[in-house]
Length: 157
Ligand SMILES: [Cu+2]
Image (cartoon, rainbow, N blue to C red):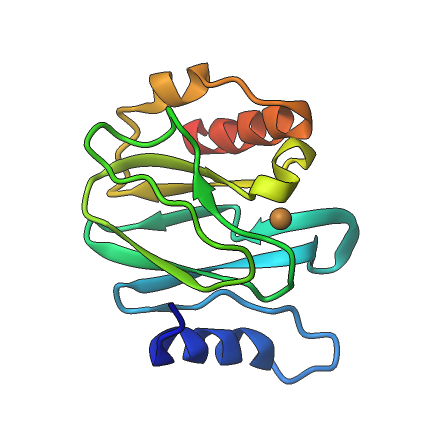
């Protein structure tokens, strides 16, 4: 679903700061946020395939648009890593997806093609960490294990 608003996110992301080396920047406008899907962390080509930001904190009822700034990615919620009663999502490859988050808690999400290489992220709604224990129990392959562990450590810090 490519709405005009999502298109604006993409444009804002590419516009950066105007410098030739500008990093694509995720935008937050009011209750609408974006998470970029990138082939490499900005300024760090040795860290390929990332969500930017890896941790996003929002308020209940806010929305997040996953933006395919680079090709070859998607975002899908990870089973066991969303609050009870929350809706799962599974975005198509290379497509903007907007998800609303009415229910507080921690949401873990992954890029299906790059999951085991550690392309994973967290969205925290309403600063509510009450499902942290169940989120931590989910097992992951490859680098996803290490990346989720370090992101969750950041939440607890
Ligand atoms: Cu990916």
